[in-house]
Image: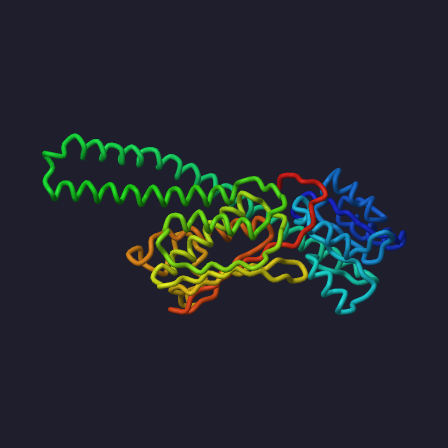
Length: 368
């Protein structure tokens, strides 16, 4: 079975016999092989050149395969490398732990040549498809930015011209003429706001990631204060638990907070007293945040539409917006290894959930 593109494999195993066997099998299919007998040697090789796939033994000196897998998956520079565990055991708990840490597959010893080659080929192809999809996203982001940027300038000019027209010819315009000009101005403002959201979407998808430590409670609290200042007369009960510090991109996390809280405040506007609660729980590998409100809610039958660009479940007459905010949130989270999802019911509020990986400070803070 041919493999799709250049195929450099790193084998990490302290057993000479196992290394020789795996190398012999893979060299028959024209793979380029590099070898490391422990975690430290492997890290040096990876820092020098990132492999397309890693075959990783569970039992190694100094650091076992599980700990090494966790180390790589917590590093934004290396987390996308597919890892296949090499194990002498098909014991269910070890397999479960490997997948929980982010491994893509496992192969049990003694190796069957056809199975090993097939699994390696499968994950190489998946990696190639993922890269192609990411490139398509980048091209779409660039197109989105170019179109939005080119449209915004003439729209702003139209708004200024209408202002001049109303100022200079106020006495000539009839009441109907003034109303028509105001409507034109209103529509240009709406389109300009949509373009601003498209630029935000492009920014969320194309901005280079810089991972640093974030006090999530402080970010949510500061953003809430900024948004509440726009509606000072409202009665809102804002509750924030002791949220954790995490490692993520500060600029994108701020944009995430803005979109989440803007939605929560918008869809609770008809309540005499709005309630917004923010919590976080920990799983083995993720922080899972929840932002719950007592707002208008939505029908769960349509939940899958909410993360699509320009999809809305409520009319603009009820609630302003362009239908881009949730798509921005999902893009921000996906780029950092997380995801978002929603629950709700009509008239009973909604809950926005999102996850981000639990990671230590990366070995080297570099752009993704």
